[in-house]
Amino acid sequence: MYTYYSFFKLRFATGMQYRMASVTALTTQLIWGIMECLAYRAIAEASGGSLPMDYTSIVTYIWLKEALLVLFNTWAADNDLFGMITSGDIAYELCRPVSIYSMWFSRITGARTAEAVMRCIPVLLGAFLMPKPYRMTLPVSGVSFLLFLLTLFLALGITVTFCMIVYMLCFYTISPQGWRMVLTGAVDFLSGNIIPLPFFPEKYRFLLEFSPFTYMQNIPFRIYSGDLAGAEIAPCIAKQILWLVILLSGGVVLWKLAEKRIVLQGG
Image (cartoon, rainbow, N blue to C red; front, top):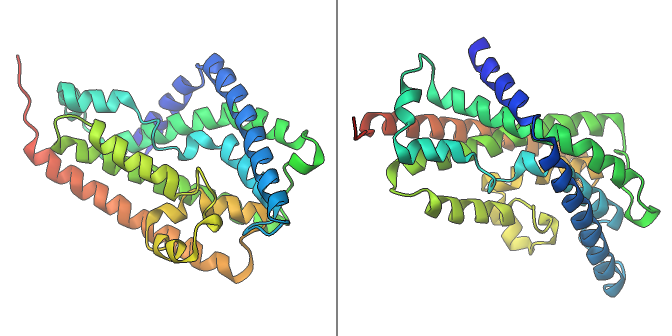
């Protein structure tokens, strides 16, 4: 276990070196967050305030999404890992006396956490300093905040295990671009990263509840904002744990199968 923690720590330390890139991204996220708040404000006024979510909850959801973007985006994958698979450098990884799945899982989690640490505090600070209609609010209670942290941790695990399945599937194709474009694009839309899931038609939300996408960022953000509360939370946490186990098991199985068919060419 300490070995994989070392991989996490090393990747975390590496990610903390790219401060200027984070500053640039920070500016983009603040501006994008303001644009989204203004857009939903216009929608709220046009509809007479009749929205699936309270406007204050929407604003909080948007700022959390921007602050923790790197934790849950699937399109910003680790290109080094794709490069190892397509170039044959995976041979060096196979020489290590560790589980490649666990090592990559630790690396991805460390990189995402490092970027999130650098970006989230300035974004949240800016969100709390916004004028009142566009200002992020505190959680409704201490219990809600603790549940937010728990579901945030589980949502990160689901996101990383899903990305690991994408990496494993690339062992079965010539190029990783197809899997990346189809799967990551779908996740962005279906997990609530573009539009909060309460805005989806009810029949589509019902179908999405049978997918892992609902249990990514959608759950912790809605708990924090107060849109998801009471007896609705426990089943969501149970389903998060279930999907985490399913995706983790699926990724390990795919790796075991891929490991048996890897063919490396060259000297």
